[in-house]
Every structure is written in structure tokens, then in C-alpha cells.
Image 1 (cartoon, rainbow, N blue to C red):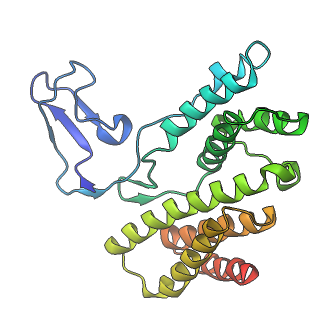
Image 2 (image 1 turned 120 degrees about the vertical axis):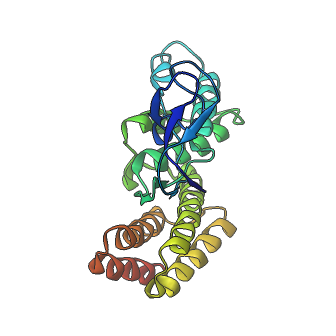
Length: 236
């Protein structure tokens, strides 16, 4: 949507940025009677949601795995739901925090349904609990039993990013990426149809292609578009 990001409360006169709070209610007095003061509206899909997994991490030694998974699932779902990549007209990167949160959401949801887990899976889950620090496990750290969960989580993340790329392109048309974004869409559909059951290296290439495409659109980096095409070629 397009909004006026700078707000002013008509009750108390306080000014704030909607981009920071994600709300039209005044952070000073709580009133909803505010107006936008920008001359023009800006495209904006991002939320003000933050991810804090500290309360889950501090209970790793004291709570059962299933309970920890439930807590992590709730927090990662709340963070990723409605997450957007256009912030006040600026296109954001497909960042590691969002990717790790999407994977944690998937893995935690699976663990809440499992009767048994092995040590490797439990360790992997605890590594994912650092998602709020912008960390995500490397390809080599993904257990074979969790590979499809990562693949599906990343495909879903790229699907959401691609949606915002299309929204951004409506505001900033660029025919040079039409074919590239369609190829990206095709690979997302294919991996989702496979329920994410692809090699972890393939999931990384999908993410790298989406990131490179976003870099080209946000910064005009011609080399990034070439890199996106090469990543997609490697997926074919």
C-alpha cells in the first residue's frame, strides 16, 4: 500500500514515523486521531514487528523440547506473518533474520508434532534459536531429515519476496527483469510442489538469485542481474 509515513497527532501534537511503529495511534497519548504530514504517499509493505527468541533460548535447559518448539513457533510465526520488504518506498534485501525465522517456524512446527527426535535434530533446532541475531545454519549443518523443511521454508520466503518485487515493479517498471522474475517464480513453484525436498545447495541458489534480483532493482547493479541469471541457470 502507499501511505504517508510521517504522522502528527491532532490531540497532542506529537509527531512520529509510521515506518517505526506500524501504527496510526499516537505513541505519546494513544489517540487514533492522527494525520499524515508527508506531501506524497510512499509504497510500504514492511511491518514494525521484531523477533526476540531470548525467552526461548534461556529455557533450553529447563523445558521439554516440545514446549520450546511451541514457544519458538509462536514467536517466529508472529514475526513472519505479514512481513514486507518495501520500507517507505525503499526495497529491502531478503535478509538472514527473515530466512532463519521462516525455517525456525517450519522446523519448530514439525517438532511440536514429533514423538521422537534425535540429537542432531535437537542441536539444529537450538542453532535456529539464534535467528533473531541474524544467524542461520550453514548448508553443512542441515540434518538430512530437515532438508525438505529448509527447502520449503526458503521457497516460501522467496515467494513472499517475489510478491513484493512485483509490487515494487508496478511503481518502478523495468522490462529487463520480466523474464528473470518469471524464471524465479517457476523455480519457487517447482520446489514448493516438491514440498521442499531438494538439495540444500539448490535452496541456497534460489535465495541467492532472489537477492541478486532485488539488488539489481534497488541499486541498479547490472552485475547483480547477471548473477541472478547465473543462479537460475544453475537451478535449471
